[in-house]
Image (cartoon, each protein chain N blue to C red):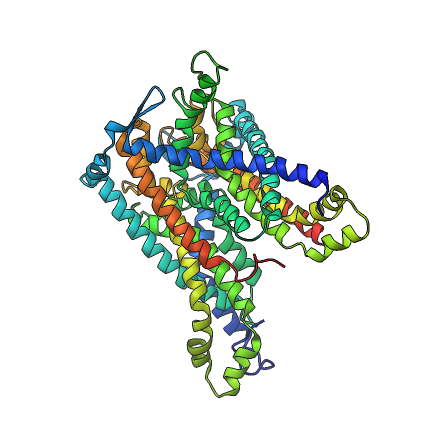
Length: 290
Length: 267
């Protein structure tokens, strides 16, 4: 721990320490914590004819859990996010492992190729993927060319499956990177020791590599889950009228539907879900490290 | 000394990697191609090759306005976030600081939570305070979003500095201020710059928070989104290509700066 105090024993007075804390924390408090608090408070009010009635009530939460249109959409979104997480882990782990196994320049190049899409514009990725899945898109062209389809099909776009595939592709780099970093941290000596003790490649993977890479894998899965959870543009762009997710419902409350307190209540539920995921992942990772 | 099983596993994962990389990059190549030539019935019409969409783009006032907004928001928010990250990192590494864990949690929140929550929180807060949404709220949104990244990079560097460096500075008679100015800051400068690069890249592409806080201002991703709803035109493909080019250049520069010396070498 670095310290700028000359004499460690002579600590600053408690009042002074509190004052310095408040100065340091002022901006994060004002710009992060207070806004989150303000929409939590808003979720306890209700809207009537586009007017917000400042009278504490749980009616928004009751409406949410009592109305299957909303609660069902929420459960459907959770399932979708779990599917996105599963699919991106299923693809991301083998890719991270393959890159980890490479050496020298090839390894660095592959890693760079895996990471660059992280920074490619989200909206651009959506646009290009939508073009690929569409009626005249690459997938249809390839299938037509191979003679598998007689005419272009619409099955790839504007449904839940399209949302799942698009999200998995967009969020895949967020999964590959933490898994690779976890693999990278495994000391080579452990792998040599495992081989020297007579373990085969599969045993070494199952008993050494996989358990030690779990923290990164959990972190990657969490990223995919949380990012998919709040995404409201992907479902709109590739999901069409059937690709409804809770993010999209929340967004509409702040636009056309114009019921801010209800939107805030749903966002509070989304926040609680994301926090639960983060805490569960943190718990799983800390258990792994023991 | 590879076993056949391991060999097979490498071939299989290699195939997965190749396919996924094609899926990740093919759309990019296609939009570049589409911005230059027309394609009909799967055939590239080379005679239509033209850079005109790129030229007309520069005379499109709404694109230019979005571009200037994106640049302003990115630079202002990144500069503010970098300074704040430096101060916060110095604070949380101070041996007598209180509430470190709590403060760190708040700093990381906008990065951990779905962007829709951060965007919404700022929207509701600005509405309650009667602040009109526009460039100021966009800057705020981007700043809290990139703060976590900037903070993390400065903190990692600060933790890696040997305490003896500071002790030596004090022993040589430097004051606290001199130690900060002549010892700590020069060592942190490159981490701050790397954090700023990464933040610029993130701010340039930020879409989900921006939707809520932009008001009637447009940033480049929002402009693109609006254009995309209309349909596919060579002009959009040209803009997409330019946006991609900027993102890729920024991310490669950042990746090269982040590359730890020797870490990826043979062991």
